[in-house]
Amino acid sequence: MVEVKVLAGSKSIGGNFVRIEDGDRTIIFDQGIRFDIMNKFYSSFITPKSITELRNLGVAPKPEWYEGANGIYISHMHLDHLGFLSNIPIETKVYLPNKKIYSEMEKRWGSSPTWLSLVPGKYFLKIEELKLLEEDENNVMAIPVSHSAYPSYALLYFGKDETVLYTGDFRVESFLTEDEYFDLYKGQSLLDFLSKNKDVKVDTLIIEGTNFGSDRFPLTPVNAIEAVKRLASSHAPLIATLHGLDLEYAFALMKAASELNLKCYVASEQIASLLESMPKLPAELETIEDYVQNITSFEGTTLEDVEDKAIYLVSYREIVDFIKDLASFGKLTREVAAILSEPEPQIEEASEYDVIANWLSVMGVNTYRVRVSGHYYPYQLKSIVNVIKPSKVKAIHTINPNLIYNILGK
Image (tube, helix red, strand yellow):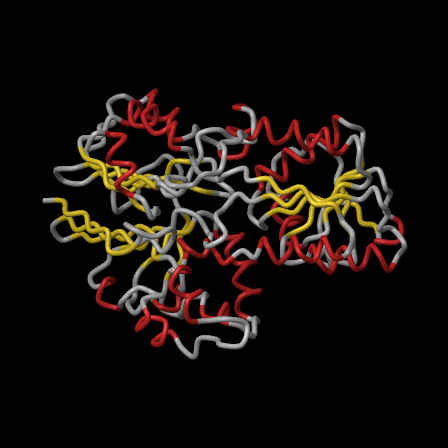
């Protein structure tokens, strides 16, 4: 008999840990960091001493939660889902969305002087890549979903007497067109897949609810990009900050630059590397060599030679230094503006949106802050459930699970 245990994440945003026991098989979906707890105990000068300390505080999962696991499946590589792989105490397989992207991130984490050095796994872990739209040896299927991290997947487990769907984090509307989405993921999105495969019956749905309880007004990707275009027509250059894994948003910004006949520059090694995974880009892209030192397939230029009529793609971690450098080259004009996008709640992955906004204000850069969520909105819940048609629903990745149950009449 299938038993689903939500051991973490039922009343928190992030830190999901779902354990599914089915006879002699045990699988785990996500094993993320609890940033809500981490932020209570650590700061820039109070840092973790060890994984043991993080376990004792509840930041990292308990060792006994992993007992007997045949495999650990990660829906996407935000740290509140990927977690500390070094915390996994047993020899097992870890199934990741993309091995190449993880390998690049692992190098950066491994050399970090901070707690990020605890993220990479130990030698006895075997890293596998999720199989897209195909059942694997543990009867798990990965189905693409739109999110602010590329790639992201929902996970479907076909148990002996019950089918379990774990959505991971997802939004209903993508920055990509249907054709662009299919080209990138080589498959249909979750709701399209279930709509066209009605023989797949979901018994238990484990669904995220990040936006429940939030008072932020819903803004669709289409609305956001139209706003970007309006801003780009008045500001030169326009600096767009984004998460290092937010490929869909980066693609849409490049597309906007092309439509407005603007140059598009990237000042982030991680974003440049991610964009190389796209089969086709909507605009020519140039890397700024001061920030992108790895060899890429894109043309390179220097900060001194960039043009004003442009959209810059910059990561959150580099935006403050980037603007300081613009100023040093005399390119920080009154027309410069920045779009600070917030696809995730500030508590998730400890993103310091306020700190960045304060710096931009001090440096005289007009900032437009926009929350284009990487998660579906409450008004979309019923339409999602009408497609999936589950027998049971478990809310996760939310501080307001009762709001979900109230809407569904559970």
